[in-house]
Length: 93
Image (tube, rainbow, N blue to C red; front, side):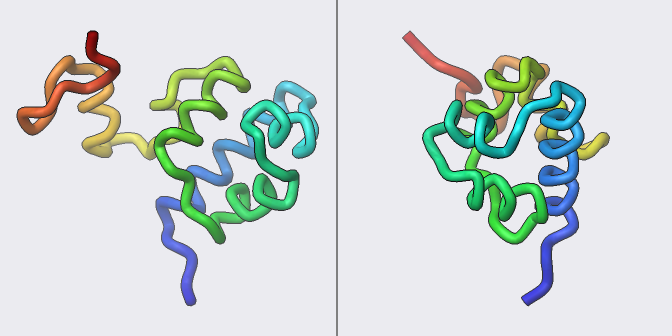
């Protein structure tokens, strides 16, 4: 099993920001309701991060979700627009 390059990139950005804030894996995991072992797997790119979990990480690390995305991806463009592919992006009321 190979690690997907995008998963590895997301994990490296997660670790980079966590370390910049001097936050432990345990603290980050607690903020998201998961174990530090799961944080380790995300940071290595072994496990994919669901968008709902990515949102929790973004809030805990005080960055926009797009911080974790590679430059030039559709995700970055989608995050800056209110609609994507006919579906509403973000919460609706």
